Image (cartoon, rainbow, N blue to C red):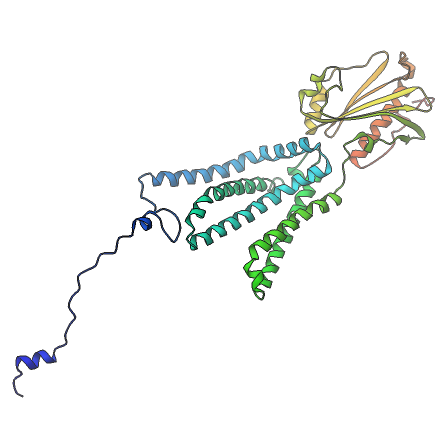
Length: 394
């Protein structure tokens, strides 16, 4: 082989491209540096207090669960009592209060999802001002949603309390529980509807595009529609004297004619000393008066409603005897009601010892009517007891 000259050698060698100088990443412009165009948020700056913020967030979450564990037993009865106080323990009011326990968290969760989805769309489209403007709204919705969910969790039965009747007590408890259960039914119907819309949206582009709006509207309608259904299917509680006591009351073959009724919020004026009944919070007071057809005895009964059985018994224990020569006062309790009854002659004359049994007899019948109405079992008192009709030996 002949020796290769310098020209032939260079011609055979593979030429390498010249090295290019390293280029530094271009610095973002002032508007891009001030704000991330993709997220619509200003760039985060490292802070030496970041660990403290994370610790505060963790402490807040722990505090929320501690509050749920220890304050649930306080918040739950307080909420039920407040609902009873505001609605006078009416059927509709207690049903709506129970319904809100389930419906409010569901509605807040739905609203939070819609607001957050719109914020995500605004970020993608670069509408940074709209994203920043709705930041406070999203935070408030998140806080309200967490509070509503934690409140609803306090009504979940546990190992010691296996049923809702163990958690919810007091006047209107049955109606409250019915409203809560119908709220759950409404949420279940809304979720089933959303799943059905999702299936329809696969073949209907219009439904898929407006899925959030349609599902929110129909879900809200289903939740609200559960209220009248719950009220109509719930055992009604009467909160007026006219509903409980008929104009003519027939018991034990006796005929009692109603002469007066009264209904009022609170218990002012029921007794000469109002402070005696205000030892506990009284919700409402009902009054009825009857006269008899076979004697001159008259019966006057006040029924005062309290928030719990213990409250009614505590007030009853604090009341002094109010009997006199012309009238007989009888105090008793039935569930959360305090019954204040007086029996007397129609002319207000002195009650002889031999007449006491039949003078009190009409009052006992009226009290039996009230107790039986609220317990769902109307029975007549036994005329053979110590208190008996006129002309009947006890």
